[in-house]
Length: 252
Image (cartoon, rainbow, N blue to C red; front, side, top):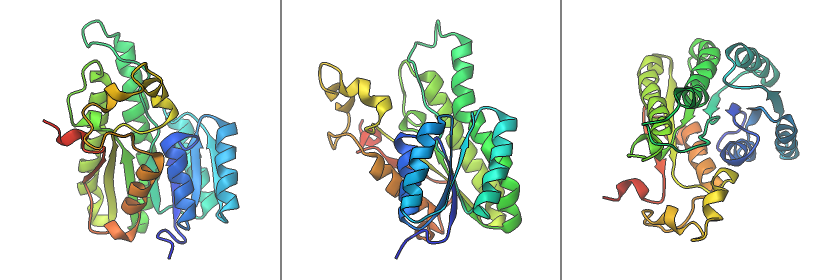
């Protein structure tokens, strides 16, 4: 039996990588899906696959850091889907590494906008609907960088730690309405964003040196975790972090 049959889901950052795979797996599990990201061409491609799986797809090509644009987009997709049960804040990321000393503050701010403020914009837009209907599952994507020291990535680690803290606080704040809020923390995952590491002279072995399972995770494995958090299988779970990292964070 499909785990998300008849559910309505919103997934940000859904044009590629982890977000795309979550959207497609939700569709495979019976959910209708709204896909939000900036690249309309890639969104339409993913949406077509959702439709080929027999589910409804809605597309909004917007910048999640634009508060007004994302608020309007959320309203449109809720109307298009006929409601919302699941929200996945996957949009985010990091494009550089640098020591804190000498880091341009504009770079720090850009990272916070993309990872933290975008999440807040979506939650403020969708929150009233979830609270009014007194149900829903929110899944915020963070990273293991938010719970372990990440040299040269303090800007990114701090942003993801903020997402984790936000999720815990919101889990308490929204629990009265039956709205669950959890965080998904991937480790090293095979996506286009990590391709440069796998293309390194050592074939990515340096990145895996502290991963006990000695392999890269897949987007399918992260999507499976998202399905668990979205489904009734996790109905008594809120304010928690689901870490999928091959054991990286348990290493001394």
